[in-house]
Length: 183
Image 1 (cartoon, helix red, strand yellow):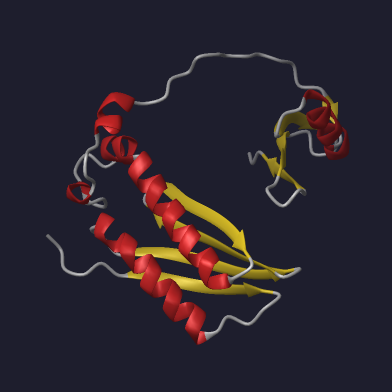
Image 2 (image 1 turned 120 degrees about the vertical axis):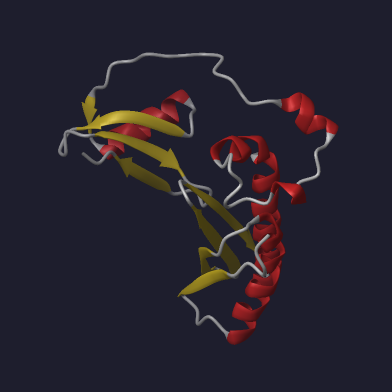
């Protein structure tokens, strides 16, 4: 077994200066996740401040997959705690999927995942429904309107200008985002 795992973190501040205290606290908390990994990893933490709300977004790059969490509260350190808890839950929840992906156990230390009765019965999710639809060329604004009309949190459409399949989605902050397919 390899020695100490090192998670190299980069920090970005939006509407605030990232303090040494915030970096040290993040490194300490993210260090809790080292027990799940064998190899050194890279991660990114984005701190932002908007209207008395402190948001922390953490991304950990694994080979072939990405773990990401975003949490907001009135205290930056509380947001850091919440993000680490979400990342740990994601790792635990996707344990089976990760085991299949990393069969040779090069990156994930599965001995640090206690198997619960829920996980043994849980298995993997399965496709229970399949839909087909025709893509109509439309603007992103029209796609957002259609999404709101059908009451979904995303909408797939053909961008009328770019002529690419795109996805409009509603963000947690109440705004909208667009994902564009790349050729």
